Image (cartoon, rainbow, N blue to C red; front, side, top):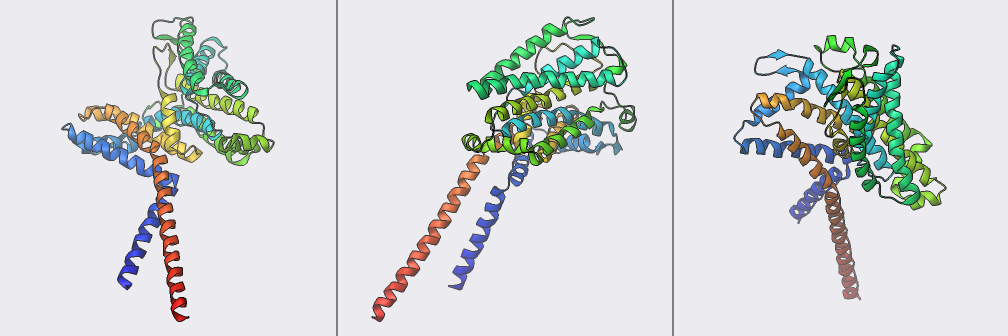
Length: 394
């Protein structure tokens, strides 16, 4: 009897641990990341490559240390941080809308609008030191905010699906960008004239300490954006109203919260984050204006970053760093005979596993239901035995 009781206690302990694991979004995110890398490792091995080389490339992109020759090159650290900036900002763009109950699939279009506006201002505005670059960044943020705000107004006032409207606006942004940039000075099929020095985000100190990587002042703007996101969502009435709108729109409306205003503002602020990403990439990673023929996909990858980061400021920061590290590792993987596409597969697997989170929650609810049924059954049995004993006594 005692052995049976101990076995039941051990089983309950395991259920309790699994329950706690599924209840924590952070734990689930870590779990799915590990699963993504596990399946990626299996895939690399299945195609006849050495999975160890994949992890060597990832380690080098993260720390700059090359295990094969024992040399350290901090340039790789700078490039990883630089690649992470647009991932994090576009993740914040998606996350901000998601906290208000919206699905901003238009981060890519907002990113393009911010990039395009920043390039136009950089090439045409007066070259006043500091002000020139600041105005270009601000213009990119404002125009992208307006671009996203239109979607918010359509959703809030006319119930137009933000998914459909943002998808359409992505392509409008792409082709509008080409039309505008082709009119800029010395424009060719893929680039414009070089930016004046007053417009770029270069940081000589970063160049020196990271062995001339492309890491620039946009990194500081990204950190500020993360803090702003956290402050708005966690410490302001605006953030509370948006979170309430996301939880239950009708309940928020009945509580006196302006749902129309919150939806419109959430899309506008989401656009501002994505526009900042576009402006930073334009003025930080390039010395000339680009005439893009396709999308950079930072906006779409931002959806994955937000999912992995659980729509939180810290989570998005870490998830964006992960995606930046994988992007920087692509060239290193190719040099080690590992297909660079494996990084896209790992990212895709992580998103798939994150999407299964709802399934895990349903499974957790089923476990709780079964546990409750067992407890009720045991209680009923105990009461039945007690009643039988009383009858026998009488």
